[in-house]
Amino acid sequence: MRRSGAAAIRAGALVREVCEQVEADIVGQGGGIAFPVQSSRNALAAHYCSAPDDTTCYAEGDLAKLDLGVHVDGWVVDTATTVNVGDVAHNRPLVEAAHAALAAAISAAAPGVSVRTLSRVLEQEVRRRGLRPMRNLCGHGVGRWTVHCAPAVPNVLAPGDPDHALAAGSVIAIEPFATDGSGEVAEHGVAEVFRVPPAAPLDDAAEISPGLRAAIAAFRGLPFARRQLRQFPTESVHEALAGLRRRGMLQAYAALREAWGRPVAQAEHTLLFRADGVEVLTA
Ligand code: MN
Ligand code: MN
Image (cartoon, rainbow, N blue to C red):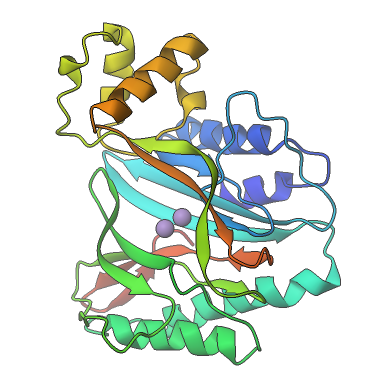
């Protein structure tokens, strides 16, 4: 799915169609969509998710991330890659750095290894190429109906960060980013990724139609996008999300943009730490 999705990222292709095709492939192969497929381009590092009417196309020279999550009975894996659209020379080092950092971290990963060791490897592999990792984006644990849980796996080793040994049974997404910019992201634009915690009392929101409440509840705390609710009228989805936000039941995730507006590459795999080694679940 990641490979076929990446192959579909070409100049002129619609971002929304590529993401929806990947989502259809996930479901077609018997998986569940753990979060809406996201494709952030250039200085957007993460969380760009097409609106239902998004007409954005990929263009020659784009550095296009493809970030997807699959669940089976709630158990989540998370993976991403970056496509250098048109294979332009100035974007190649960024893509290579992200993939090399991920490969180096996977090589260093073993049962009992510390998170700080992985952060050090990730940071060094990006920096020795003269690029910067992303200080405020982290890898993370994944769980059942949970895309992000402890421990965080920072892409930059910070002195005060707690350490954590990754015991057998840990399932961890590692996601290095490489940029020639500042190495920090900030929120940018309107959120298109949402989350309603599974314990939220959705039935209190009686102004939302029962069908729409059931559809939102069916995400079971996983992130979703408005385009996954397109069977409902646009206006009622808009009002439902506004109402949930007023009630404090809605989390919204805007796109994350590199602070200097410089391009960003990302690579991500989910690893299972076993007693006898590490398995890349998203290879
Ligand atoms: Mn991801
Ligand atoms: Mn992730």
